[in-house]
Amino acid sequence: MAISSTRPQALPPLRRVLIVGGGGREQALAWALSRNGTITTVWVAPGNGGPEGQAVDIAETDSDALVTFCRQENVDLVVVGPEAPLAAGVGDALRSADIAVFGPDAAGAQLEASKAWAKQLMQEAAVPTAGHWSVHSEDEALAVLKKVNRPLVVKADGLAAGKGVTVADTVTEAEAAIREAFQGRFGDAGAHLVLEERLEGPEVSVFALCDGERIVLLPPAQDHKRLEEGDQGPNTGGMGAYAPAPLLDQDALLEIEALVLQPTLKALRERGIDYRGVIYAGLMLTATGPQVIEFNCRFGDPECQTLMPLMGPELGAVLQACALGRLDLAPTLTLSTRCSACIVAAAEGYPNAPRKGDAIHCTHQMNDTHQLFHAGTARQPDGSLTTSGGRVLAVVAQGDDFDAAFAAAYSGIAGINFPGITYRRDIGHQVRSNQ
Image (cartoon, rainbow, N blue to C red; front, side, top):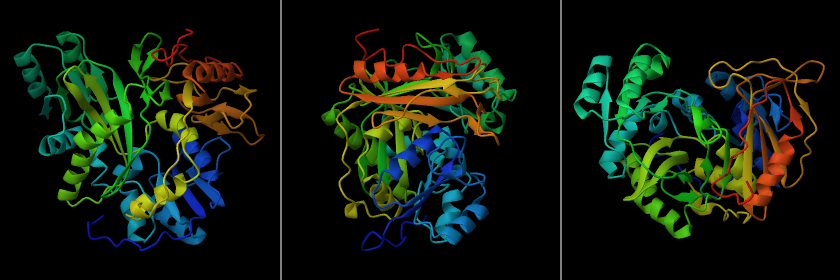
């Protein structure tokens, strides 16, 4: 989208919303937007077996079909959930058809779609981040590793569904990760790599809703990437999360805005990118200050599931204002002061080869403080529910403190059963006192 894109003088009525994507993040967005008093209809394309929104059988990257649907149904706002359709230019196609979109264009999506591009932008904007090398062949990567002779972080340059990173503990492990990537482990996403210096410190996720010029900050969240308890095992898309992460208070959040987010948004504008969507900054809080580990161009999953129950009913209008480049016209987004906890139930074999097609039995009861967001589920013709992906369900609960929130979430997951169900029992160990 060009910087000169027109911006309306007032926010139009918001009644009909389409969410693009088929995971738990999109179910959480549909649930949250359905609680907006003015919104009458929420569709999810393609959706999944979950109850939130009306599922539409359109692939998330089918721009032509999405444009046609929006025109037929007079959609007021499209919220694009995953990174793949954003990188593929779905936002560009919708904007070309004069449809309001929350989510960056393909140029802006490079923040996530190319680690090397994002690193270059951070350097230009003086955003603090680890030292790195962009490499284009196995020989080049191994030469860097040999020269530095210490463990490095090995990242696929392109989109790898959150699984393209190896934080090597030894030089041998880094070498193996390099060889695997260039032998095709991540397909085209691993055709180029970014090698990074290792950083030490706790990680935290910060989300900024952007209209191209202005920012609204959401509460920080902390997720758990490793499959197994004790932060062991392979990296996953995320096995659970909690918010607000106490690692950052309001003053620290404002420091992150000034140090990371505003310079990034300015650098995007200088490249002619009118970034209207969410900037997700994955940070490591090191002894010398916050450092950006990665940027994503969409809400985190499962952080989104954790955050949405904390959002006030103004969320829809705020997302619409971002899409139209007019956050200055948006109502103030109210936020709950409660604590939110999310536990992911995954399929056996996740993340490498999750088994699918197992019957799901669920007695979990949803209410104002207990949510169940479907991810890898499918609804069968007889109405039964089966597993259809690696991360199957996310159980979310809120409480006055984290002990209460996690107790409620783990109580909820006890009401879910399918063969090989896998979940961590130590999610939120950083903030729980009753483990």
